[in-house]
Amino acid sequence: MRGYRNISPAEARRLCRSNEWIKPTSGMAQGYTQANLVVLPRDLAFDFLLFCQRNPKPCPVLDVTDLGSHVPKMAAPDADLRVDLPKYNVYENGVLTQEVTDIASLWDEEMVGFLLGCSFTFENALLEKGIPVRHIEEGCNVPMYKTNLNCVGAGSFKGNMVVSMRPIPARHVADAVRITSRFPSVHGAPVHIGHPDQIGIHDLAQPDFGEPVTVQKGEIPVFWACGVTPQNIAMNIKPELMITHSPGHMFITDWTDEKFEVL
Image (cartoon, rainbow, N blue to C red; front, side, top):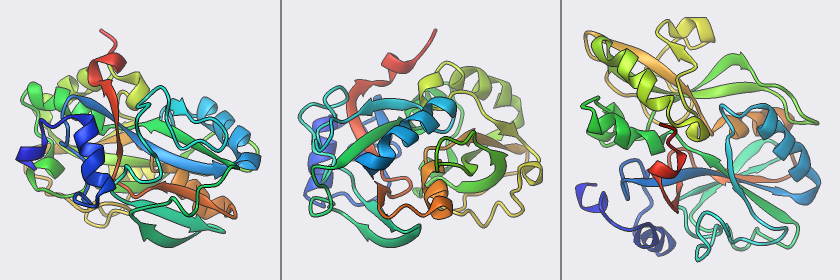
């Protein structure tokens, strides 16, 4: 990964488009904002936009494509959302039926693409302050968990939040809260600290998405709202078709992290 930390967003997307990179993107093109992807047909797009507006912690909207367009005009006007992510999940009637590296054959004139803020964006700020990010250290995907935290419904969209977890040394927890709270457009401050059972997580070694990481002595599990929440919602409401990024395999925008930092 080290050789990919300082590449440009355009180069990162080229590597994804050519399938030279089909791994999680945490730590890739450091300093540039990463985003979750949700693609829906027009008849569901308004309700989903309303759902995001009502649930800005897990679903902060960064960009929305024009109807039928696969170009995120604000986030990366030269990009193609059909091919510029490492992997995509395809849900049909609430069931994950495919994990693919290209969704060009599925995107038609009725599709709308949503880019949502991703917590990978604030990881560089944590690292700069000497706060470890365990999944980067261990070269794996961030662990993500379904919770009992209810989202506010909108139309057919309703269900519970998904969170990502990072073990933080106890002495750095306050710093982690302070640092990440400066990034409200990419999930912001944690939604829960410690005591995972209180939010419906019973085994940190068994994440619902991503991979487990080591929690060392003296560290506290800290949980942030996660943009995989729409995938959990899809499993509940069972839309005929919903396409998302594969968890941890994000879209890399042309925006720098500083754009979303509130000082």
